[in-house]
Length: 145
Image (cartoon, rainbow, N blue to C red; front, side, top):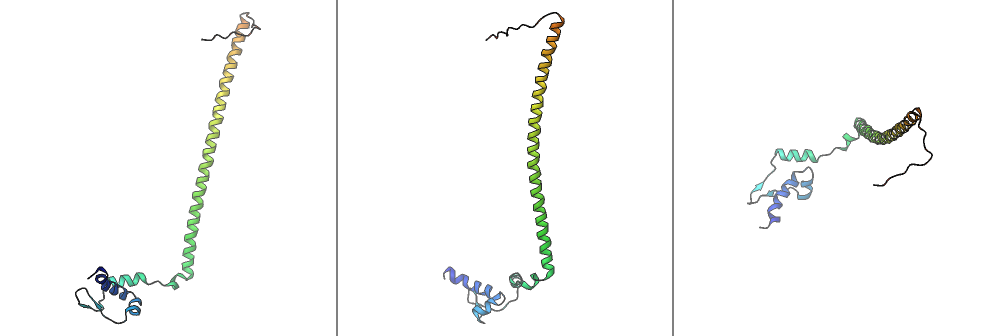
């Protein structure tokens, strides 16, 4: 007996128990088991489970309360999506502002160093003039190492 013939009785039995499908396809013939035993209509929990899961009532979805639930669900999903997009936008703005603050801080630090340098040169020039020294008009000579 090949695999197709071995599985066929079980498949016929399963399809017969599905509501409306088995009777149309196989009629009222009894399903013969693997060893030749005749299987009747046995009411099992599995049969009820399969029939309950395969039944689909479109009328329950067409009620106004169902549309209201779907509308509320879609509204919540849209609200959450909007919040996520707003958070991503704020994070991007935060990163841009952080970079601007960093650059501004760098420029401020550079300006403070330049100011301190000029202030120290001015202090040296004032101290030199207080001692009676005069600045030379000849540029300084740079020594190379």
